[in-house]
Image (tube, rainbow, N blue to C red; front, side, top):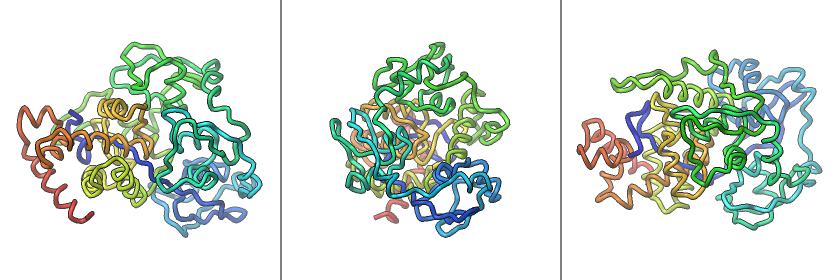
Length: 379
């Protein structure tokens, strides 16, 4: 069904609606004090630098691991170019009318603002639920141009020929664009199905080149549990790992909160969802396995496509929220269709068809036992 053995556990994906807070700037002329909810990517954007530069300047071995109260050094160029956000800047935003399939995180990214700012400006609750037709204030956005941006970008974009194992989310991440923009530019349906050999227009992409090999190779091995994975699968896994490390991800505590909130919103036992996420990745969203199982919920691309069909919109497995939604959607389906809970848990790890055909393998039985034990800790 959803998985062959992965680097940390099962291979399913999920996306949550809980929020990753991004505090206002707290830096002096040449430093920044990390606030609760900050990520390195948000700090880099706010201070006019890059994740890579911040990581190098502060000798960060893992860019996803920063803590509140930590003081980060900024380069002199970044410090000079990074004015703190003002109330005027955040109050002078535009408006945006929500379309089917939109999320707060996607709208914020499209307008160059943050989820927290959109939530605060519109009085949304902690789940950040929005509905098609709703008008949102978008702090800091000069105009509500999201509807026309993909078409304009497509005119100056490049093309890409789909290879076996590619997904729209991976292609979008590789070219610095969005799933929605690629879908719109190529007239794809809500499932975002693509096939090997297909030529896609990639909005805003100057050339269909992958990330440099020096950055994307060697991050993920090619074997797990005695199985060696195909070269193209491992290459995609390395590209996805590099993208997650470069952009920065929420903390493990934030990802755990996202999993619990998404499970509640989607009618899944939060203890079950959290136990699966911990067993799969330890709530580490930078986790990628040799099988190209991605993120907190360890979802492989084919399972992500299935989850996209179930929720009715394309899911980007690199995005923390979409990853959790994908995983929870798959888990919900397995719980509903399995004869009992242990079979549903086993199916998340081994695949439903394999469990039905072969029964639970020895490692699957251990996985099920671990998840059921972990569930007691999240009650």
